[in-house]
Length: 374
Ligand code: F6P
Image 1: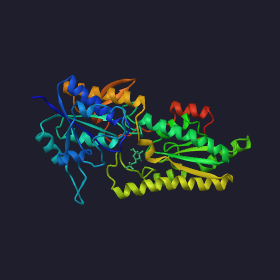
Image 2: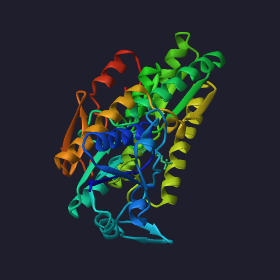
Image 3: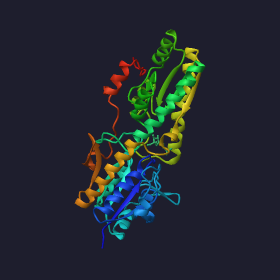
């Protein structure tokens, strides 16, 4: 009898998940003689033992589709809402893993999922993970599945906003996702030729931002594009958070671990509120009309880019190869274009921030981009 591999997708969806599922599934079925099932809606599917068989037909024609055919959720094995009660369902997951006689479980997710998956490694399960999140904040990998597509969508939006900002002589603030890190704002901001880029890793001074907009105005450029990462904070907010010994963003942990749905909603509303307030203040300080565009979930929707399809296919097929070699407890990382296994214990609980001296920041400064700090 063939051995069985399970796959699940957890956390926020990203373009490229289906390409990854296809990569794992096709290699597992065709090359290594496994059978493959997909658990529905993240770890919740493991708890309720809801799965679908992933045969060749199901895996066919999905490389280009967005979202995830398995569905996803932000549920955590050790803190799951079951009928209104928060319960630790880890043992049920372990039980269902054994009941289905799985050879391995491949978990596709961001930082929170890597941590949750590591907990299952500690319970003795054969786990392999893939890094996916538009935030690109998973450590030990150069890039995560979904980041490239989200960056392209945000770049296109910035391109379009340029023409209208120019025509109306306005400041347009564009809020990108990215959670507590600035990779998406930085990448899209530079590609889209933003005049100001605000990221969580570089707390900004609003006076410096206003001055850079006015400096442009004095040289005949009567509009500005300000890209704001949703987690960006002012110097005052950063200092206040330091005093409270919190992360300035007051944010959640990875894929939402440790926060209730209400807390997540509140945080997201607050993030966007920060951008709206910033626009209002900039308008007051510069006397230039301001508008805000919040890109939101648009950045996660639709078809994956070619780069994401390639990345997802390569990481996915490598996951199947590792399962065949019985190399478990690892995340398949992308390093210099190669798919390499990295022990999950080196990844769980960590986050990849943008270093203040990152070459992209240096390059943007040479282009005259203001980060609100100098
Ligand atoms: O982690 C991915 C991400 O898109 C973040 O950039 C964003 O803060 C969050 O998810 C949005 O979460 P949700 O889809 O639950 O609204």
